[in-house]
Image (tube, rainbow, N blue to C red; front, side):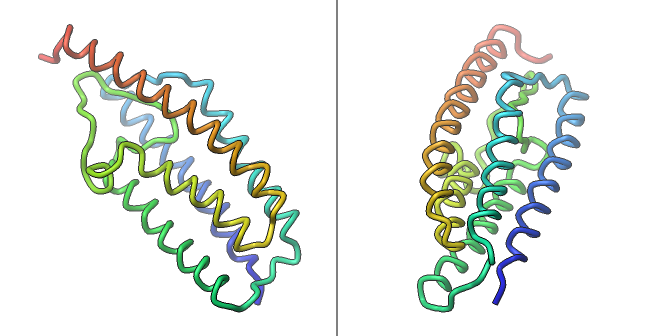
Length: 176
């Protein structure tokens, strides 16, 4: 059984997320939203593009090797996708691939955000672990899993910094 459909799904999903993010950016900008650290966005796009490309190249011929482990990994992948969309739906128009904050806006604590500060990044991290295992791509795992951790570590630090700065700004200049 071929797993080529996984790549179609992943590419379609990433493109959908970019379009949704662009739409949400426009909605947030209309409410006075400001983007912080825009230089992080191209790095994230490059990382995900290179990851998918490496995964596609290394895992050829994209075969599913039946067994308990492969079935379990596929099941976890499906659960991760449910988690991803739980994150997106919970944040609504505030979900973004960029760091965009709106004056007077509050940090959303709905859905998985009640339990974790960055559940979407947990989903992404687990994907960077699970997909190379599922598709038997050990080099992709060895290169991209730690790279993703480093990129997300910086991204989370910058998001938290932007939230602190913005919270201080909102205290000084509360919305009328």
